[in-house]
Amino acid sequence: MLHTVENLKVKNELRNTVIYQQEQKKKSIRQIVDGLKEKGVNAKRCKRIQAVMPIHG
Image 1 (spheres, helix red, strand yellow):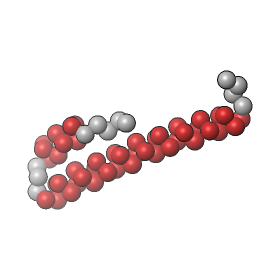
Image 2 (cartoon, helix red, strand yellow):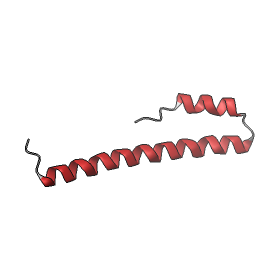
Image 3 (tube, helix red, strand yellow):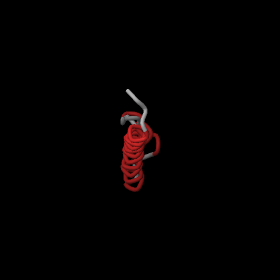
């Protein structure tokens, strides 16, 4: 496959969207954990929930 400028642009865009999606996932998990903390669930349990949910796509 030839690495033309167009191909590199597309690859960069794909990589950026993947990174963006991972960031969104992290944010949503953090929001869930923060919500639990507000309800009075202790931090250890929140950490466990965070460990159960895969952060990396």
